[in-house]
Each structure stands twice: as structure tokens, then as C-alpha cells.
Image 1 (cartoon, rainbow, N blue to C red):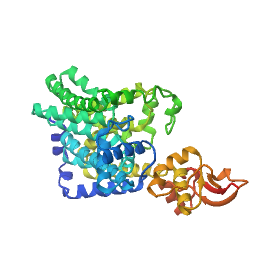
Image 2 (image 1 turned 60 degrees about the horizontal axis):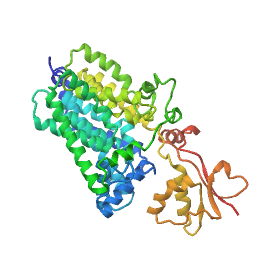
Image 3 (image 1 turned 45 degrees about the horizontal axis):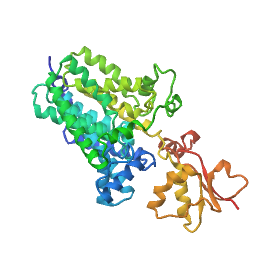
Image 4 (image 1 turned 30 degrees about the vertical axis):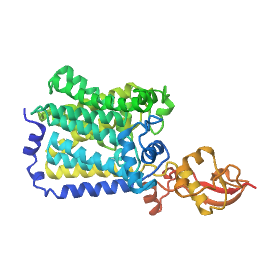
Length: 470
């Protein structure tokens, strides 16, 4: 049976004739537009803990971590290097986020090319670069992209071992998978899919997957030795991770999700959430078409196994993991490769049309996201900067979220016992109004407002106001 890559090359001669330089330029253009549309920046959430951990490494040397965020060393060390290079300010965060986004797109292209051929690889690059879930990570420091990069890198190494098995390649794939687990422990959910391939003994002999396990084990043992040397507890990272959250209720899952019933909620995350746009809808005809076309699945097997295992286990563990789209990244990677392979087999005009629709849908859904999720904290920083000699108070959570932004700006005039306070605009009645801070538009809202259509639901948050208390 021919491999998918061979099948694509024989079925798409017209697409194969497209100048090779046009594809990288197109991916770069789409990626630039996607990151610009989805630009969010520092959100004082998980990214602040990565920053604190990286700052410790950059200023004081080796740091074992004091939370499950600060033990995600591939990301934390990358950010520490950026801090060393450009200083402890937002630029270091931006460079780190962009670097991991670029790595995700680049490794995604390489993996798809190895699995499904050159044209499919570049098409997947356009889909990866514009996927709302991934493009948002182009400005927010997150562990999702590093985890996915190492999972894809390991799959790329394994895909190349289907026809020519080498012990070194299998060990390196294991090292990549080990780094994925250090990026975030949830990588083990995706990697459990390789256990199915081990039981089947196909498309890799069992010894090859044992070698993969050995490569991953070397990385994990190395990290455990580091923790033992630093803390006396080789399982330090796991103690921190397992004690993070004991359980999550359905209310947590409802944040940003349409939920109907636990049996179908995971599917709704894939097919309804804006983070994936049309991806999983397109994956249905893609799977049917490629099955009828007699494609070879051997190189695709590791990606498919990891994507399927990740989806099933996240769905089953929804009481432990929030049904957040980012936990379905390995599933989205598998779906993207499948769709790209399908498009690469089509007639050029039809493929170009569907690809354009898919990318446009990605950008449209990306424009609906909230680029200012911490607007209250941003407004507080603006109010404090407007007059550094004026003390300003705000709600404790808002102050906490604004802490780093205030520090970077050199501001120290946010205090509890202040005459002025930042409050929600609808709570400002009865106080002397000093300044209003209208909530900014989401990208789609800004576009509609430009043509005279204003939809309040497309605001980034609530309006804020600076008032005089006494």
C-alpha cells in the first residue's frame, strides 16, 4: 500500500508546480495577520507564574520551582533566556510567546510533510498558523505550544522510522516526548495512545516503542535527579502538580463552553467553540475521503493514536481537567494533518477555495476572542499612570492582576487607603466622576463599529471609572 505522502505527490501535480517560495511567504503572511488579530499579550494568569519562575532562574540561577507552573522547565528556561537577553519586561514575554508559536507552525509543517507530502505540509502550515487556539498563543506565554511542539517533534521522528527503523531515532523521539511531559504533565494523556500501538505491534515493532520509552525515561530521570539535588525530593514536580486541584466542578467547565450533557460536551468543544472554527467539520469528509482513497496510515499512526487518546482521556477526566480547548491540541493537530492531506489530493481550484474558506473562518473566529481579558487591571494601570502622584485604590483581585504591569511601569501609587478608586462604571453613582475608561472592542466589534454597527457583547469587558471617594 502506498504511503499517503506518495499518494499526494501523484494526485496533485498542478499544486506541486506552484513556486516553492510562495508557500513560506504565504504562511508567514497568514501567521503575521493571525497573531496581530489575536494579539493579547500579558494577561496576569498562568503567564505571571512562568515569569516569576524564569526571573528566579535569570537572576539567581537554578530553581527547583515552587508551583506546578514553575516546574515546566522547557518554557520557563526559554523565558529566562529571553529575560537575560532583553531584560525583565514585557518584551521578554512577547518574544517567548512568538518563538513557541513559530516553532509550533514550523514543526507542524515538517510533520505533515513527512506524513502527507510537501503540498499538504504547506497547507497544514496555513491552517496551523491561523488556528485561533494556536494564534492566540503567539502573544501569550503558555505551556500548550511547547507541549505540542515536542509531541509533534517526537511524532515526526517516529514517522520517519516507519520504513527505516533506527534505535537512535526512536531514542530521540522518546527524548522529545519526555520534554513534552516536562512542558506539561497532560502530555502523558496523548502519549498513552502509543500504548495501543505497542499492543498492536504495528506499525512499529515493540522494541522500537520500548526504545521510545527509554528516551523519555532518561529525560524524566534527569529531571528527578535535579529535583533530588535541589530539594531532596525527586518527585517534587509531581507533588506540586497533583496537589494543584483536587477536583473541578461542572461550573468550571461552563466557562466559554456550550454544554448540554457530559456524554456530548467534549464533542461540542471541538465542533462549536470558536478556537477550532471549521476544522473538525472539515475533518469528517476528509476522513471519509481518505478512507475511500485507500491511503496508507502507517506514518500517520502515531499522530492519530495520540490525538484520539488525548480526546478520549480528557473527556473521561473532565472532572479533573476543565474542558478547555487547549487540552484538545493533540486532537486538533491530527485533524489538521488529515484535512491538509485531503485538500492536497483535490483539484487545485477546489483545494484553494476550501483552504481559503478554512483560513478565513479561522481569522473570523479569532476576531471574536477577547483581547483584553484583564481589562479592569489594564484600566487600573492606565489610571495610575495618568497621575503618579495620585493614590488610587481598586478591588483586591484587580490590584493583584495589575501588579506586574504597575511594576514594569515604575508605579507605586496603588494603595488601599486612597482618596480615588477605580470601580465599575455602573457602580460609580454617588461619587465624583474623575475619568471614564470605556472597555475596548474585540477585533470583530471594532470592525463593525467602524462601519457604524455597535454590539455591546463584542466589548472586551465592563466599562470602568475613576471616582473620588471623599
